[in-house]
Image (cartoon, rainbow, N blue to C red; front, side):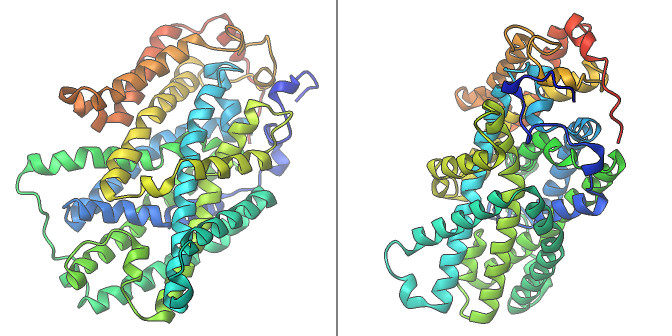
Length: 474
């Protein structure tokens, strides 16, 4: 980078990562995905499908398909991060403008704040449940569950303050341990239910294909929506990659495998709850509270806490911290952005988002996918179709340059974004168009990508200058 960057667009956290500092290999990315996948929201995603009436095969098939689909935009958006060493809010300046980039960055950040609050609430409830097992007297006092929530929230803040290398260490060490404990939990509860045979013998509740598709379609969208956040900000991680091969192989090995395996644990354990208690208990913390074996329950809850902490700081803090920093790089650092994320996460009242499986899957996951799908469509169309994978690195940090557009905003991308979001979410208001909402991520992605390409046409003068990229090839 030259000294010509604009102070309003640049700080050390947003600066390109030099080649000598790109140390993440295939294992780091595979373990990152294992650690982010092995968490209670993944479990609840899978168990929610069982609670909605799917058989275990239908649930696992839906989850695997959704993750294979979302892996495509994940790897595509990761390319620019690896090539140029830039984070998501800088990368998106190419398509939205140096100031317009704040629009998708803030939308992505707000969704991440909601997820941060959800994870913090789950972690707090796990602590509270563990107190109920080990110390029933104190757990019965009013307000203890809120103390547990804020204690876990504070622990997240400590990890954020220590920075990205602490996150890398947690992912590398915690991932194998989490899978082992998850398999132990699966063995323990299925043994109580009489083995995997009885557990997995529960048939689907759907009598016709139409009944199944009515649940399958929004569920598949929810699977994609589950990682639609990271599909945007994956450059925040791949900017540290040693090579394109390292990030691509790591993600391809880690994401579908880890999500499917841990989802199977959620499916099997929830099916076991039907055998044992006569009802599908989709919340693992509530399920563990049904058992009165302090040692086993405590080990499982500690494992869930570690997994939740790993996922929260990696998936729900790195991106919004950078996004908020992008609003005012001179005043907001990565650490400050992380603190802002934590506060907004509380204000979004995560306990309401987790009220039941339907609100979690069809409300939260499908709903925000209609906001993020259009952004992904515009980013991928701009980088691969309009600019042929070429960006001018220095111009991304400069006012009045290739990505200035109109006062820093690319009006064409904002129009494409608005149309994509409106079409994706119109089904919430118009019942006859409900199917558009059920496919929210896909609809928004295709509409916004198509409109953006039409509006941009051939590479314009500014985009043409942007295509003269700096030769950064890790």
